[in-house]
Length: 377
Image 1 (cartoon, helix red, strand yellow):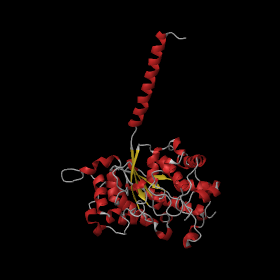
Image 2: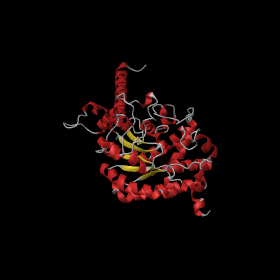
Image 3: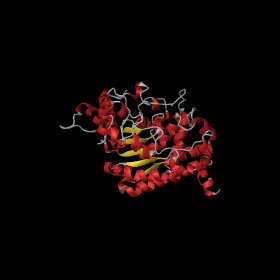
Image 4: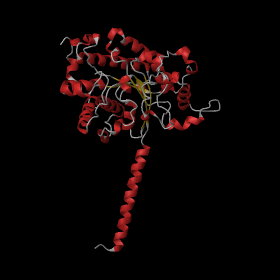
C-alpha cells in the first residue's frame, strides 16, 4: 500500500491537473470568436429553418438573423422584404427569448445595415403583399427596429437592448444569399437582372457593413408537371447552368467589393449532383419534400447546412451534429405541407457530411457537370 505521505500530494496533484484542464477548455471555448451570419433568401432557406440549423452547428459561437420570403429573387426581395408572417407563427419554437415570434428583419437595409430610414413610411417605399410581419403588425415593427438599432437619448429603445445578445446587429461577418431557383440559369434572360441588382443595391450595403457574401448555389430538381422543365434538359444541365449563374454573380461582387470582402460560393447544388450521380435512389427519395419534390427534406437541409458551414469555417460541423434529433428541435418551420418527414439517421448524416466535405473542402466536381447538353456532349 502506498505511503500516506505520497498519497496526499498525488491526490492534490491530480486535482490540480483536472482543475487546470477544466479552466483551459472553458477558456478556450469562451475565447473563440463568435461568428455573425445573416441569411437572405427564400423557401430553400426557411423550409426546415436553415438559419437555426447553422446556429445549432455553431454551438453558441454562431449568431444569426434572417430576412426570408418564399418565391422571391434578389430583386423582389428589395421590394417586399420579409415574408414570414404566415410561415413562422405556427409553433412555440418560433418564440424567442423575449417572448416574441422571431420573424427576422423587416427589409434588406435593416438586415444588412441594422436600420432602414424608409420603414416609418413603408407604404411609400415597399410593396405590401400581406406577408411582411413588420407591415402587418405595428408592435413587431417597433420591436424589430428596436433590437437592431442601439438606443440613445433620441431613440427610446433601451427596453429591448438586452436582446442584442440573441439577434446581433451589423456588422455581419457573412451573409448567405440565394436567388430564386431558376434565375441563375438565365431562364427567360433573368440572370443579368439579378446581377444588376447585386451590383447596384446589395454590394454598396455589403461594403458599408464590411460583410463577406456567401452565395448559396441551389440545386437542380425535376417536376414533370412543370411546363418549362424541358428548357433545362436534364439534372446535370440544370446544375451546370446554376453553377455558371452563381459564378457570374460572384464575379460581379468580386469587382464591386474590396479584396477583404471577396465572395465565396457554397456549392450545395454540386453536392446534390454528386448524390444524383452516385446514389440516384437516395437523391430521389431522401433529398426533397415528399409533397412538391423541389423544396428540401430534412436530409436536404442537413446537407445544405454542412456545405454552408464548411464554406464559412473551412471544416465540417462538429462530429456530434451527426445525431440529428436536436439539430431541428428549434426549427420554426419544417414541411410546408403534409406529414413531417423522417430526419437523417446517424449513418445517413455521416454520408451527407462526406459528400459535403468532398465538394466544399476538397474541390470535387461532379463528372456529369462537364458532360451536359450545353457542351454538345
